[in-house]
Image (cartoon, rainbow, N blue to C red):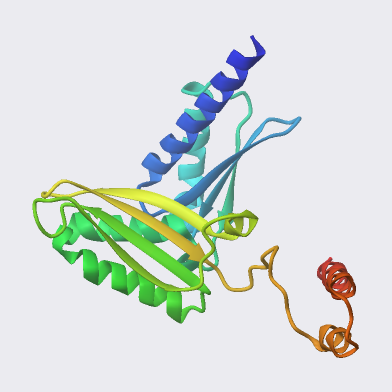
Length: 228
């Protein structure tokens, strides 16, 4: 019984997230997060256009709250807006932007839209990015095109810091799939080692591998304390 309830809750959460994205339209909402508090449900909407989501005097938020109560049987839903300050580093917004461009100007613009999006990400200072556009481009036979630059982890724990998203565009030629992966600047990876004075001194002293490893651990601990 507990398993069925868990699956039912996750199914309801998925339906709510998809409804919120459809309500505001593609390219407006990046992520929808649902948190459960003692007071009620908290729906956090991540967007780079908070004014569009809130509406005039909060009428869109009020409309969404009423729908959540009636359609999804939520007792006390509370909608919060989380503003995305750098939309060029958000994989979902980038994927949606490419999909909207293809739907508006046609699938033949896949190279121009992909290079334009990749240029924005690169000029903003991202460490790396990869775009994949798949579909009947430019012929009747389905193909996959890859656009990438920089450094991007694909496996292991370090790959978890890479922001990934997917989107689809419905064109005259057929459905086009878009996959985006972005490694934002300032992201600290678990396998990242910075060579500084303490590490150089340890190496100069002909330290063993274990001693160098201990020095690296101490440096990482100091950085964590400084961040806090």
